[in-house]
Every structure is written in C-alpha cells, then in structure tokens.
Length: 70
Image (tube, rainbow, N blue to C red):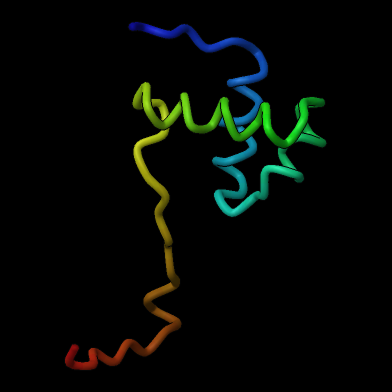
C-alpha cells in the first residue's frame, strides 16, 4: 500500500535528518504528538521505505582507526 506523507511525517523526517539519535520523547515534543504516536509513525516510515537505515559519519581525517581482529 502506497502511503503519502503528511506534514507531521515530514517534520519527523526533517528532525531525524538533523539528529538521527533523537528520542521518541524529543520528537514528540517537536511535532506535538505522544511518544507512542511518534514510534508508530517511525515504524511505518521504515516499513514504507521512507527511512531505510541509520548511518554514522565520522571525521576520518581527524580520527585514527585501528582495525582489530574479531
């Protein structure tokens, strides 16, 4: 089933773009919904493919990376 984004979905996505680690409580305050409603929307956004994953970006030029055997 195709889902169209509403204004609240767009606000959640925008907030997550700025801070992918934002908690449901933080997001709920930004979009004026309960934490549970935010959780349900994020789960649907993931299921529908609007959110495909979470990424970490490091300042590799500033960081020394040592590879350890597993």
